[in-house]
Amino acid sequence: MSPTLKSHGRSRRALAGRAGRTLALFTLCGGLSIAPIAADAAPAADPAPAKAAPAAKKPAKGGLGFDLPVQEFSLANGLRVYVVEDHSTPSFNMTLLYDVGSRDEVQGRTGFAHLFEHMMFEGSKNVPPMGHLTFVQRVGGNNNAGTNYDMTVYYNNLPSQYLELGLWLESDRLRSLEITDANFENQRAAVKEEKAMRMDNVPYAAAVQKWLAAAWAGTGYGHEVIGSLEDLNAAKTPDVQAFFDKYYAPNNAVLVFVGDVELADLKAKVEKYFGDIKKGPDRAPTPAGQVDRSKPMESVVEDPLAQQALFLLGWHTVGANHPDRYALDLLGNILLVGESARIPKILQDEKKLVAFSGGTHLALRDVGLVFINAMPLKDVKFDAIKQVVRDEVAKIQKSGITAKELQKAINAQVMNTVETLATNQGRANEIATGALFHNDPKHILTDLEKYQQVKPADIKRVATEYLGANWLTLEINPGGGGAPMGMGAG
Image (cartoon, rainbow, N blue to C red; front, side, top):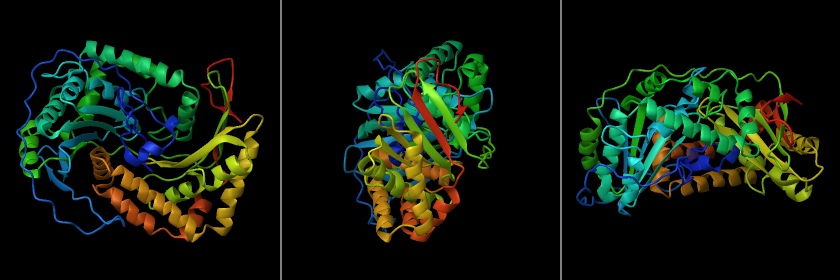
């Protein structure tokens, strides 16, 4: 399962399709207030495009009975462009995904990936601050952005005739973003306010983020996506410019269009707006790092904002490209996803130990985690919940699962995929992440083929291999004293 992305601004729309169904506490929400402002002239609406004949039906992939008819081309500066023509509605989605997230940051300069989610709306040579938002909204469209551990994404949903508006806006800020002392100070203050509002003053959020950082110590995931205030305060404008120059380049991005567009028209217009932007420096891949799996990690913290306890429990697994990810995704579904899953059914319905429980398998680019979250009823101790989890995991490790359970989990993946592909934005985001992380713009369908190849024996094997004694636990208790920042031994 992919990581979660949350939107930038008022919309709160999940950007990552299937990823939007992971635990909300694991996300980082961007936030800017949006207000209309006076703006310079933007390109006029494009003439109404001629409708193309329906594309020939291609062979089915992933058992869905249809394919994603992705067309692609590249510019000389390295920008990769993917297109799905769909003329069923007079609108399109334009998604620009940059290969930079918090995993790519260096010690002492954390939080820059998320900072740029804000900086990119501060204006460019021909667009005033917040002009990008205003121009799109004035023609009836919407746009937003999101940052997570692995990537930063920007999207625009626009009526068909405003293709050139979207291209102009995105290319102008890539070519000439205004990185000034004043703009940086403005957005540094915005990030501080966001951290206070969305993490420091939200029950459980800070404790969960610090638990994850501790679990992934030694990798690029070993710090919070929003970064530290110390690093943010120490940063200078030249540091911000250097980050932009390194990562915000056409050869470090994927551009996707899904909807009422035509390939020939797009080729000419993408070249017109993006073709003269210089290629950025070649960058070495960010090292994956090494997670310490040799011992358990047990943490107990107090949260003065919490009214009830919250327990989390998990195991280290694998990243998104590992072949075991498919069996682990399905195992997570069988154990944790939905009220009829094994563990929630026992905790909630049979033993009545919790107000709610759930979880999933979260696979990021280089690391993974099977996690469970449970809010206990009054006087229920963590040990009682741990015992239920131990027992259910042991049953799978000893006896495996039924073919019926496996098919139900596969069916759930199919339904999630159908839901994601139902919108232009969902398709565009999946094509972009598939192309960027897997060199496969149809990776969402490739995934379904892989899920259907999983056997009950694979589920039993990964349960035995990964869900062992070295688990990660976090017990968050209500507290009235100090801030819940430390990760104390349990």
